[in-house]
Image 1: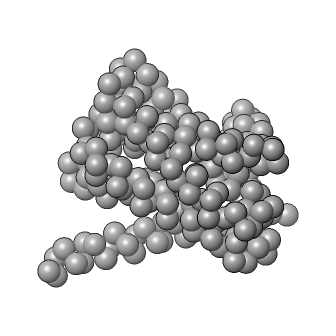
Image 2: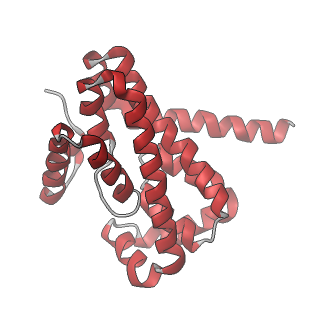
Image 3: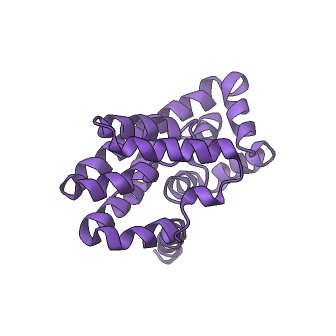
Length: 205
C-alpha cells in the first residue's frame, strides 16, 4: 500500500486537513481552490499544494501548465504575505506562527543563515521540504532584499510545481506513486546539485 504524505504527519488534525485538502481536487472551482491553498500555505497553512496538483493534473493532463503556473503565482504571492508578516507583524502574528510549527528555537539560526547565504536560503526553502512559510517570515524579519526574495521564490516554487505537473503530464498515473514517495528526496538532491554548482562557479570564476 502506497504511503501518502499524510502518513508521516504526527497530529490527527493534520491528517484531517490533508484529507480535506485532497478532497478539494474534485471541486468545480478546483483551480481557484488551488490558488487559495498555495497562497495560505506560504505563510500559514500546513498542507503543501502538491497534494492538490497531483490529482488535478491526472484528471485534466492537458491543463498541467496552467495548474503549475497558477500554483506558482499564488505561492509567491503568499510568500510576500509571509514576508510582510515578518517585516511588519512578527511580534504580533509571526512569532505565533513560527512557534506553532516548532521552529521558534531555530529561528535565530535561520536569521544567521541569511547573513551568510541570503538568496540561496529562500531558494532552498522554496524547493525542498524546508518550511517555506517559516522562511518567508524570516526573510521579512531579516529585511532580505525584496526583489531577491521574489526572484528566489519564483524560481524555486516554479521549479517544484512545474516539475511535479510536468512529470504527471508526461507519464500519467504510473508516475504518481514515485512522486508521492520520492518528491522531497528528488527536490533536495536537485537543490544540492544546483547550489553546489553556484558555489563551484563562484570560486572558479
